[in-house]
Length: 185
Length: 279
Image 1 (cartoon, helix red, strand yellow):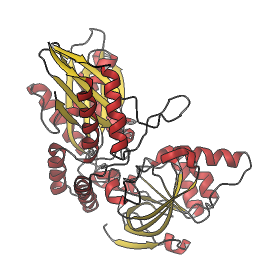
Image 2: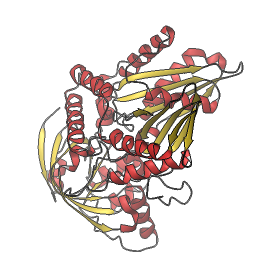
Image 3: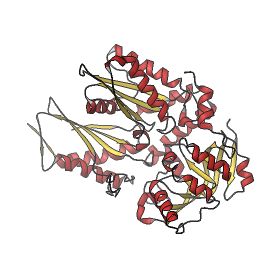
Image 4: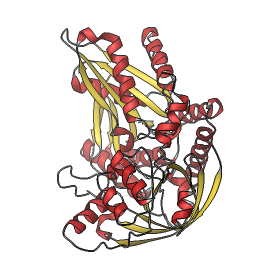
């Protein structure tokens, strides 16, 4: 189960296809953040036929709303939020080329179908470890929707950011397979 | 009549907010350590280790344990011989929350439910008042994150469903919540009373020192049974599989009506924050 892989972003689809559920990855590169309000706004822009303020193609999206940075800190506590709240918006973004999603918790079947269709992966970061994860962020910059405060879109430069492959490009799902292996009910 | 000035309340709430969000209490740390040693999944063990590392970093550097520093839930036990002076008690609580969240570099997550416009200072808090005997004021600050709050449920069962119905509802709530509330979780259960009483008891149940059984033997045995049942689910740390799904189950009860059996389940993530002060 606990194999370690290094994921340098941006990466090729071939690299993403080599990831399997249960593997631990350490990510180095750029992540883009978005949670509820930013997703809602992006989808509204698309519905109006307008362009997104970020290039979603090939991107890694991290579902997070960080704490403010203390003086001397790059970013405050910044662990993952529950991904399923983004499910309603996600297939559209996957069809536009989104390749990696990082969050916590289960995804619905529409997201998984869109992931398989577009060869994307979903990585689980460990919920409730925002202090630890803040140490992996080397640069943080707001790039869109600044008025949304913590829900603004940030660009984060991360080093050795730990995550677990939860749903792979084949649609294998650790949220089903993992608990089933230990269920005694 | 003992007098307590609101300024003292503001300072206390401010301090409790920061401490609750950055320093996890020993009761939860102890249970997490136990879970780490007992966890059967290798990946689950690894996750529990990261959770422990996070606690250490948060504590040594005074960084919030989790970016969801929650909505501030404040429980007050006000001695009936206490006189609050210098202003409004409610305003003092909110001023303490406002200052704590600003000075502690904590996230402001509170907004209007209809317009979704953020109040930008994490106020208002949810304040519960209880008048008790004596001349002391006990303040408990419990910042509640919504990853776990969203997974909480309440149901008005029929009396015919009995205790089996209660167990079924608690287990079903945990199974439906699965990975979302950041397991390992603490499960607070309120049984009886009215609708709002059951919900309040479920919340109060998670404030109990984690892992301390109910003082009533039949309730303590129900807690133990539910904990074993939940940990057989296989959900495990972060819902990725394992044997540590819940650290504790706490049950509170209250007499109810002949026609009803209210049950509320409040789920708490592993960042189980609660700090107390007595003035």
